[in-house]
Image (tube, rainbow, N blue to C red):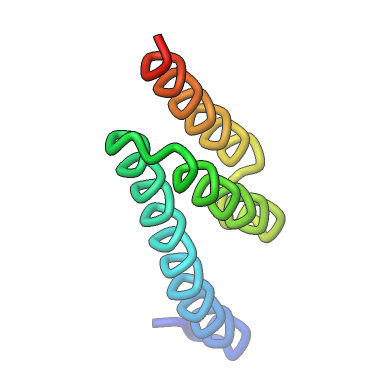
Length: 92
């Protein structure tokens, strides 16, 4: 347990931030999963729409330092690459 008032306050702040960050991360993981499911079902229009939503959430999370900025860039890049390769395979 924290001994000083400032340490007690820091503990409270960390608890609030942790719950918020967990909710944001969960939401992003769910959105990415939905994009991947749409791609595997060959619903590319839906996947593109969900990808835009995922990019917006990732950018927001990166700006708020929930994720590192390079982590968000990597996730966006890999997701976009996944969609494009699936589209190419479907048309070929």
